Image 1: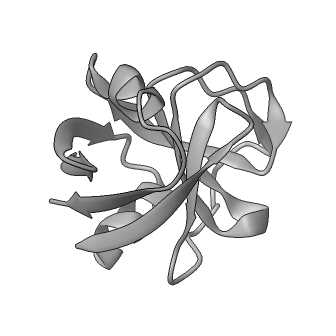
Image 2: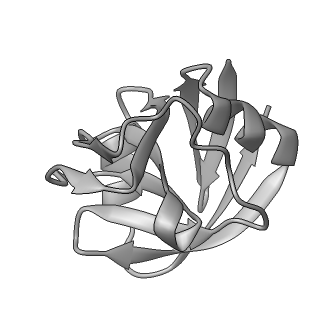
Amino acid sequence: MRVAIQVGERTVVGTLNGSAASRDLLALLPLTLVMSDHGSVEKTGPLPAELSTDGAPDVADPNPGDIGYYAPGNDFVLYYGDQSEFPGIVILGQMDDTGSNTVGSIDGDVTVTVTR
């Protein structure tokens, strides 16, 4: 399942993994979020509805370029740095090769639009 992720003026392609959470995300699209920098490794933004965590591990160790969901905060997450293993993270998929650099090159808040 491919999605377009417009980050500011640039667009990257994401590939979702088919999990219950990623299917729930698809049902919310199109989606526009204001995302904030968090820990200098990720941009996070609140989703309008919770995603299912059925079948997801309790913890995940995302890599730069991963697309994620932080269930305790109900946040959509784009990883551009190395986040260590953390409870509540669900990996939804990955951005293309330019994704982590594109997301990481933007300081502060950014408007992100995700479409099919």
